[in-house]
Image 1: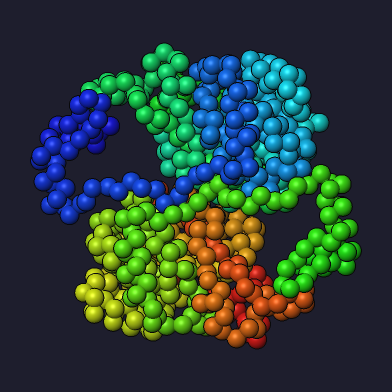
Image 2: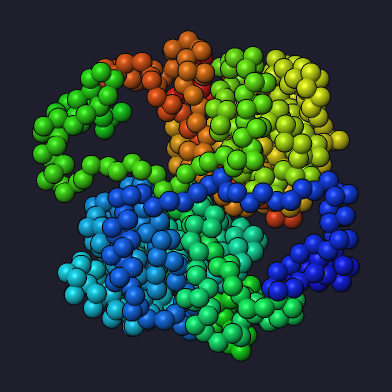
Amino acid sequence: MAELRNLISQGYIRVSGGKARLTAKGSRYAAELGLKALNDEKCVKYMIPSEFVPVLNEYKKLVKSRPNPVEKYDQGYIGDTDAILRLAFMYERGDLEGASVLILGDDDMMGIAFALTNLPKRILVLDIDKRIIEYEKKVAAEKDLRIEAKLYDASQPLDKSLRGKFDVFLTDPVETLEGIKVFLSRCASAIKANGAGYFGVTHLEASLKKWLEIEKMLISMNLVITDILRDFSIYPTKDNIGLAAHNYPITNMLKELGAGEIDSDFFRSSFFRVEAIDEPKPLIKGKVDIREAMYKDDESLVTSKIAGR
Amino acid sequence: MAELRNLISQGYIRVSGGKARLTAKGSRYAAELGLKALNDEKCVKYMIPSEFVPVLNEYKKLVKSRPNPVEKYDQGYIGDTDAILRLAFMYERGDLEGASVLILGDDDMMGIAFALTNLPKRILVLDIDKRIIEYEKKVAAEKDLRIEAKLYDASQPLDKSLRGKFDVFLTDPVETLEGIKVFLSRCASAIKANGAGYFGVTHLEASLKKWLEIEKMLISMNLVITDILRDFSIYPTKDNIGLAAHNYPITNMLKELGAGEIDSDFFRSSFFRVEAIDEPKPLIKGKVDIREAMYKDDESLVTSKIAGR
């Protein structure tokens, strides 16, 4: 924000019609520096393998009447295509076929996607939001899909019967350090020795300093990072931020800059894959007493409203 | 190997004509387990942005008479397309335009590729092999490319004049823990605060246990991992292993299995991107006295001959 304010006040860029553009002065300065216009053609592309297209089509139908995301639980869901991309990547890594999969927090309705492939041996969805649990149970019953879904609050230890029982976990942790430590610990305690795990982390709400702390946690839990796929999951703005009141820090920042409504899908996350070296060692084992600290910190720009801070 | 030997001796698979296939017994067993044939269509694809195709074409011509890789220095080079892919990814991340780039070990001739884009401010190639230095200097002189190239042995500390001077490093470290610690330390000492770095690590010669150690090193050097792209770089067998004597551990393993000559490009590496949080802290600062230990360990299957062990 400081950088943008500087560039605007010094006359290098100008914001109008919701877009920032170089002024004549800005263009001259860029030329002086020898800078060229950005070519934004990406060299890493994500595509759903044809085998999973029928799963995508069915998934789209089944999640149509899903519950709306609520701020209270830091919810927000990824696009349909990106949900199936996650599934495809997990399949590619050998983590889906014949696997017991634990999903901690499933506003993305991945339980339904996995079940549609008929590949996993067991699918367990844990969520704090009973609307999610009920929705997945209803779909499972109607479509005869093998999904278990249980109400679970991550501040409580994982039930003994679930510890060390899964081949793979998938979660989209809240992005406070406290929150992510709890989420990843619960997941780590759920998987077997040499099990694998997947989760998303953003750059918008997690600085690289926070990333470094997250990576430290992973390493100390015996989880090696094997893949990090940038911008693998995109959260469609219309389905998420648009549904809640527009009182997020980012909305106010944009107003200050003179930008209009958010019309791009700016909220993205990188997809991590980790694998346990021998036994995973969860950092947190017992009950934790965190409320606000779990969902909100100074880097929350989108997933928490200002009023709630 | 033990797993393969078991499957063969129990009659589940059979190796012939250089390929392993399920026997009738193996197929029945797979069906019993409910396993389906693998769909190996990838969901992550790497493509060179059209802007860099002319660079690729020119690069191909200029590296045609490059020196052959030698085992002594753990050499082996990536395919032309993959070299330009690395460049494209670095550009995409904002690490090429206007940047000072240090390349430590350049049998891949990335100095030439970078110079052809005219994007970096400075390109310095350091290599222990004077054939590489001379080749890049010759090409630079003939084609009027801005490449500095200097003889350098990574067991020696980096010259003072180079410390903290670069925005970005690129290296393809040897894969012993000692070797990688030295390479990454030299690179870390070369970059500025908040600088970035790129390097490749394989799964073939580096177990996940070793990956965990490498990641520990990175974290303790204040380098956060921002991207890990699996199989981003492929080493064409015909250009590499084919050129040296066929006396690698892997060749003998294949012989034992009854497989023929290696006819696929099996040697691949994941591409890491790291970024320094504030000042990078190299683990090694002074001179190190390592010879064999730098290039060879128990996980060296391809880059070292048995005789050299």
